[in-house]
Image (cartoon, rainbow, N blue to C red; front, side, top):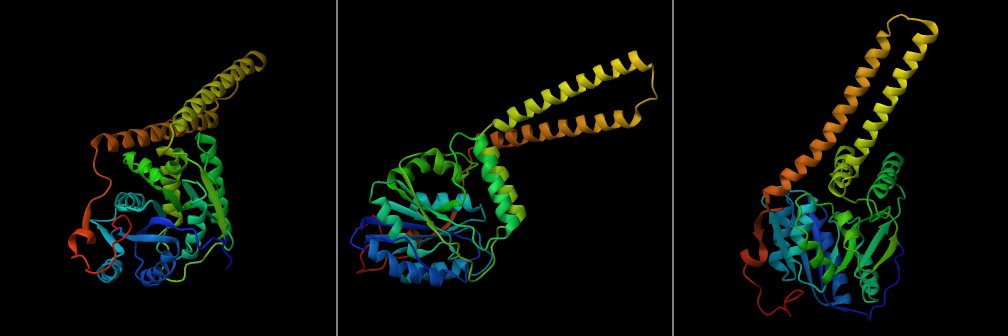
Length: 333
């Protein structure tokens, strides 16, 4: 596989790599091996932040072992499964590098792209986004994903690029801006676009998972898309208003049509089917509108409680004794 060229001589002072992990026992050792071979080429000091998001397999055991034998690895374990958004936030809050790369632990985000990301960052970009093609993706999933981006981009003021995910490099000021936004219902794809700053994009070929199974089922992807649409704008409420107005207009037109029919043809047979259909349609619209309002009320309820986005159970930087005689990770010399 061919990746965009990077200049080996161009290095950043310190680089952190944040890796949210959920049931990735089969991939962590290989991921660590590849990161350990790549990061010394692009950074004077580096840090690998592995965040265990309540995995049910041996992810914690393996990641903790990596942190014990490699001083450049920091391991965080959340107290339970809080979701990928919370795991990413935990990693960003503990990343100390001048630049931070976010990537998945399933090896579908190629480690070999990091030099290209760093090179573009050193050109002056605060965000360098790795955009994958959709080669070999199921056709239904591709169609649904593209439909989501079209709908999302019509609702919000900051557009999302189809195919751009969480795999990206962020400058320190971009990371600080993301951390400063303390909302509970986080949608990182939208937040990445909202903070702005100069951005560049690099495309790469889609990589299939070598081991393990993805936790992103169609149901979870739908829930994620719905959360993104509702968490990042209020236009669905306005859409509900317009739908209500259109329904009222249609009902008024129907009443006028009935009056004209009675005036021209006289009283006809009772419209039982028409009445039932109208009642079902109006009741359905009311339930939809109430559901949209309820989703927003629920999000307001979550925000006003001000609960933390996650709770830590293990932080290897505090819970493990430091290794002696080894240069410190990113941000520590």
